[in-house]
Image 1 (spheres, one colour):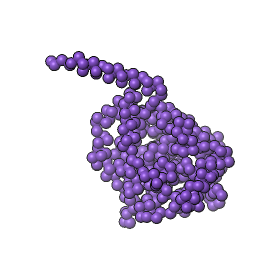
Image 2 (cartoon, one colour):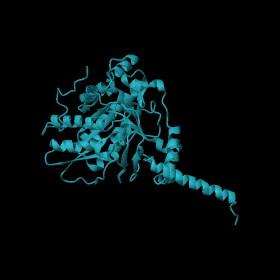
Image 3 (cartoon, rainbow, N blue to C red):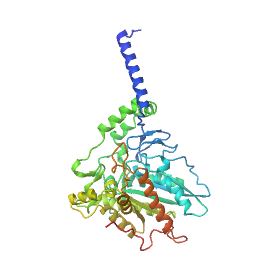
Image 4 (cartoon, rainbow, N blue to C red):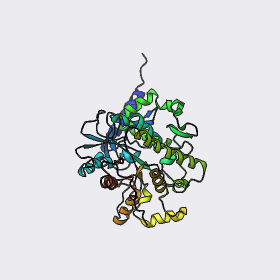
Length: 405
């Protein structure tokens, strides 16, 4: 048997000792970056069941993914007899890793809807299916493949008006390893799931990468290496196209080229397809149009400067378009941007951002989630028309939200 040279053995021992010391240091300073996601052949990616750790890249919350792969507490598939289930579909705003679970808008809604007796005699059970980075196409797939197994009584679609439109377009979005839909004049919406057959996707499912994700569950050093690697590989949009990270300037004006026209058409058809899918089962759909940070920044002058720079009257084109289009189709909409902007400006409170990131930008902080929950609960509780064909009460004339001046 060949002996390992003493120098090599010493170097290996030193490296191991250094790695162990670095591991201790990373744990002591609270660094945490678990492998939250796994590749999924239907959705592109999904949360990994059972993963837990501290999310502190933006905000600071301890996050647990339940056994079904949802950022939520455990829920039985079988619906209890006394439960009124509300499924939440969405992206990172619904996933809400930046705040504790109890502070997420959907968690707050449980108590608020029970207090107003939204469903007298029923226990409100919110189930969160939100996953960071999802567009409407993935949310539609999630609805059909996963959420409907829980037999929801109401579905809330959290729509991020800053990037969901471009997320639904393979021509506009840099992430190709996800399902997309196209409009076919004969067959309507046609799903393209060919990404799952590509070498790039197969490489994400390789055995060694699965092993690395499992190793990352136990090692902060491995988590740090993975985090740096992901930063290097992350697609970057051109700065001149962006209002803020993740939000493209082109979403604020009527589409001026075929790619954006197609993206809007696909987006609106996807929401209509969700509405139709749920309608055949007697389940209402409510769309929550979620503002991007600059829309509701408390500094009016900052918003006005951006509007002047872009040559637009205001930042609400996606809100107006979606609300008008969906209401015409009989789909209930709660536009959050108008009232959130009004609240932020009058109070001077930042609804986005954290002390360890940038206040006023990024995702909702705990106050932002609270304001969103209050607005949603107010509309559902105040406007619900009991005993009608519109159980949400949001389709009656005259209930549109007043726009800011």
